[in-house]
Image (cartoon, rainbow over all chains, first blue to last red; front, side, top):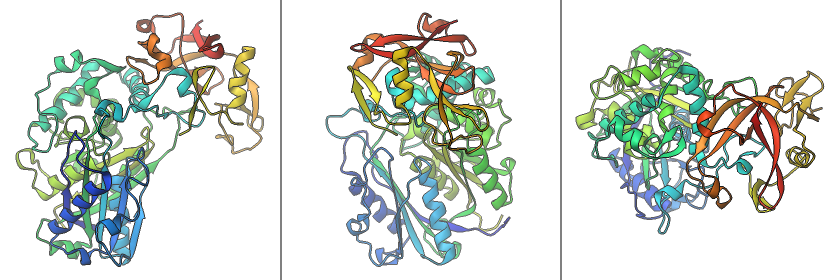
Length: 391
Length: 139
């Protein structure tokens, strides 16, 4: 179904304040982002007829309940749902909103992600330090002491590094590039320059991951308003047209026969989005991808076709994804140096880049790829956006 | 995701029909995994159906206990008091000779000497207040 016409567009975008301190409950951050996004779209609350909600998979539904619509003062909605596909939900919400708009089920859909993992008395390190098994159904993690997403990803990264002859320099290069971008972003939380030596000197959390291989939680919310392409063109802000969308879900393939660390669903998601937009990886100007850990950027660069399989380590080490490089990636600092709002992180930077409002960090943005995933890289969603209504 | 409980002071998954035989067999020094008799595929514990052919006739069967290190990490901090004295400790993903993979600690080797592809052999050690647990050693 190759089509050069946009599927829908992002007309409004906003975030709540972001903080590494407690600044209010999850629902309150969400309401702030929703109200700001509606205002940014030049709309009134009464213009909104759809609400899609995404909470963190480790939060409860009570943190961000369905009746968020009441808290936000939204009425007479024709679409309201919680979207739950772990970290891929940030992009999936926009995809579902685009489908609803295309089908005529709603005219203006607000999509919101909100999270407040840092609460009084809990450090940012403790916030995601829960025993979180991520290896599959059996549950052999706890007796072996494999706790937290860091450990599960480190296990995958080690295999990937072994396969591609990578060292900690290649991981460090990812962290350094993200920090270079963060220094240009007023929203980024990590503002101190980071050298390769700083990366190597930082303590191991789970070897091969040093502290600076890991993202860090913040409290905050991001919201976008999705409308038809025609309605978005009338808005006060530059429209961000959605030209391609894809998903790829392979489940837990780490049981036998697969290389789960390498054969992730991102490839499938990318193929779908490229086919829908009628473009290929070589046409994309910049990418905003989910970087919970440094290794994740390397693998996604390969899976989305920007680099040949096995070539991402050298590509990043050569500075190609950093400011001034040939292919900018995570231009807001990503989750590693910007802010960790799960799928909301790439979504927010993707919108700012595609709008051309990214300030000092603005790059060529005729075509932007925004990708997010969840679980231990089990669930993938991506979209291709542009400031141009026709490609 | 699953709930974690404590058995003899050690963190364990809540046992059910899909994982209990695997853990119970550790007391007898056996690596018990699952096997599909219809297509002769060995499966990691926890399978409802055979991931190869879809058969529901999956059975428990003893594996050889031989395998190799598929990947490994070294935990430099932990979130459970049971492991605090062990930091830094390894957790390895072991690919059994029969194919399926299991998580386990590898003993009898320094963390710096762990390598992907290294041959290992099942061994059993008591943890906590005497709970037998499957581990692997070089061999």
